Image (cartoon, rainbow, N blue to C red; front, side, top):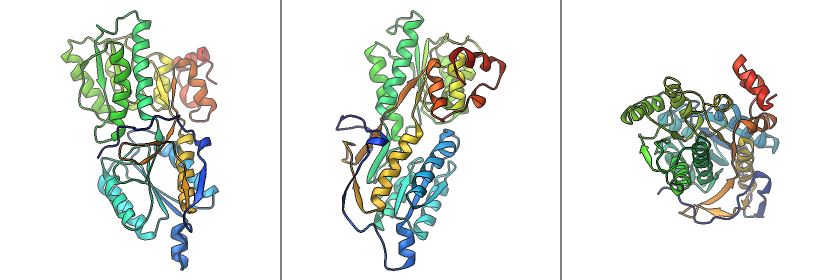
Length: 357
């Protein structure tokens, strides 16, 4: 069962508001040294390095720091876009012993690992991407992410004096096997459809830059080479779309959305090729997941204010829309560096213009 619908719409929870509540167990300590070691281990599986640079650049670092500072061992592995490797990592971690598992799903691979973990009485946290069988879900508010993207498209068309009701807008979504992709789509569509936007074309969703470029080129061709805006689910896919737009359009002519506030995405925003990106401060999400994991490792019950449709407790973190004027906020937060972003003469000029330093 997919978890794309949220029953409760309570106020969003930031990592700082996540409190640990009443004790419900002993914390998993065993009678042997092996059992004690396992009860202090948090096993983490990241999905890949291609869909977004965040997994290795930020999530690994923040999860490791949070868990180790609390006195626990963090076993963090990356499946590198391979479902078989994902399953193998899960088996190896469970054999060694885990007190809790934090899983970022990849094409449904987390479901099987979670099932094995649950059979051993090990709690499972779905991190960033929801999947069937988790005990908790920690992520940004994905519907809100999509809504922010949809607003970028509406505002971008308005700034160009184009009527959203008659605009040709191509939808470029994420991989449908990722439950979050539907949330992004639904959030974006809720805003765009309210403004009168209907998709002129909508290729199959992917999380892949080169495939996104190919799919967009085909969609653009089907529209006779005409497009007024492109809703794109993340920065990586947006880069593929922009590579095609550069052949026929000028920067700023076609509003393009994104997500992740990646270096490439921020560069495209500064140069005008991308209208904006949704900034999801990874540390807030990692801190929220770490707090849940630590509570479970200590035998405590984490608090939450929302649930998914199937009843899974959902800890949501607030995202933020970033245009060129907000890029410096991402740099100031430490989630990007000016030296990485402003690495050409053209970008240095844009950075100076928008105060990125």
